[in-house]
Length: 448
Image (cartoon, rainbow, N blue to C red; front, side, top):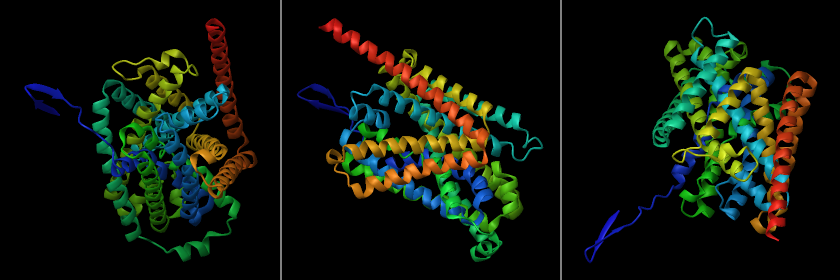
């Protein structure tokens, strides 16, 4: 804005603040990133008709986890979010800050891999090589490369593409939900009658595994410097976004299980909705689902690369990642973007859809558990209620334990794979925290 006063030109920066509507869109862009396309087939194969219930329970767990993020976000007003909350709450524990940094960033890397894998599954679902694992992995890595180039090329260009994808995918997902429901082939009572017995533990395990589908609401806190009245905007945006995401997930799951035979969903779990839509709605339905899946996963890949790479640069500048990752070119953390993309590609090559999904869920359950503990520790400062912090701690601990129990009793190889990754992450975090501690000691001695 330019004002003139007494022949003097005054340049005043136009105030640009994000309102609740924009913040909700940011959170939904991160959460609805292909989660329902990824988790549906796996959930139905485990608990059948109770899939919508498990997804709803996952939403409740996410809301409990969000309580601590909201309280800490309001108290600290720090765009560093998860990493900064731990660093500032435990200033004398560099290993804690380093560990949360490593865990949360590699959690984001796992979601990039997850969304890319899902993108690939839907993109090639209509071809004869749809079941070729190596073709699927190649396409997944290629789409990561595309959005890596877009993020490195231009922040403005990435932003315009992201806005278009987010709002378009929301419209398509709502349409898909009602189309499936209107073309139901059976009813819930009938499905429940023929489903067979399912234990409460199994439902809770699936709820824990699908927790990663709600990852993304934390992105609201990263925008704290761009919003007015964070005390009001942060809770409104986060809780609204989780509620909307849960409603969309549950509606799509309900529509899918009454419209698509379970055998089709289970057999084609990597692209269950597209395969099922073809049998129920014909080619136009399949195309609609595929477009929705591609938009959902694309926007999530791009948005996660954008937001998480900035956090990588912040952590690196504090000494907990290699210094080169803190370097920026035209304000863009190029090396951070490239490194995240590279690790996501490696994860795709090393794992499959389910192991990537479970690694992501375990990671964000653990990170959310640490946030709940951090908030409970300083609840007198954040004005948090123990009636909410304690259930959050218990729910997140149970979720983590249930996934580990499921892996240990059914897929021990995947548990070994996931444990190995955590061992490497923890070792890296310890080494960098030790180096940071030594540098701080040297500076203290030199100044004295």
